[in-house]
Amino acid sequence: MSIRKILLPLTGTAGGEATLGTALVAAAAWNAHVSAVHVRVDPRDVAPLAGEGLSGAMVEEMMEATEKEGDVRAREVLALFERVVTARNVTVAKARAGAEAPTASFDTVVGREEEVVAHQARLADLTVVAHPGVDDDVASADALHAVLFDSGRAVLLAPATAPEAIGTRVALAWNGTAESAAAVQAVLPWLKRASAVRILQGESYQRRGPAAADLAIYLALHGVEAEIANVQDSDHSVGAGLLAAAAAFGADLLAMGAYSHSRLRQLILGGVTRHVLENAALPVLMKR
Image 1 (spheres, rainbow, N blue to C red):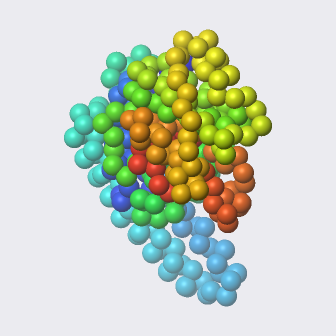
Image 2: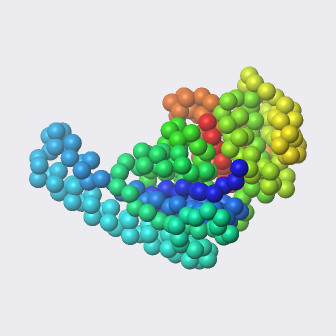
Image 3: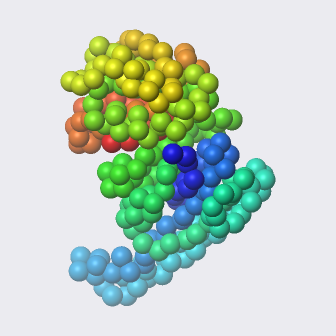
């Protein structure tokens, strides 16, 4: 399997340049198509507020303000898209089979961000989203969770600065869970092309399931030679230990399962996924 279509939700401009740059770097590795989509809020979604004690005139005014704000943001995001693809010499065109160079397209859709992204991600090989702490609103986190929980597809978390390369040295976080197995399947095309692969395991990270040595045997059947490294928690944090180990390996891609525990538990107590989402400085491919 290869990467042929990359979905890119472009919500705002704060983290948009790094996210678009990351998507184009990934596309260049596969001669893939980047389908950038900007989701505008439907002003009619404001209408139910009339039942919350607001007058019809007030709701109408809010709808008009929402429409104007949407116009401004859409123009800004389109300008960002045009500037970045031009700077990287990427052709703007429709997706087509057999492309020998990366291409990109831009579309604006009116609707609910999480619904549009989840639906479109189901027919994309990969979805690239902004680092949740970088973008100018919470929509990047909404898009991330929409892909993870409602698309059945993998998501690539873009770092704050677009990398020069992705997938030449891949670190693979393994703890034996179904989520980490899903991440292995999603990252396998990258592993086959990587110059070096390292499986990261840790005693406090491992759950009930196959060990890292079993994973190495499985990958060998796919022609992937992977070494195994033990990860030590950093400041009592497994997530920090994984990021430190990936950095020590010189990885330009970290693959891992996401949310082995519930989102609510990770929100309240913290967790590996949450730590990586908040602190990763390299592209992270996640799947659950």
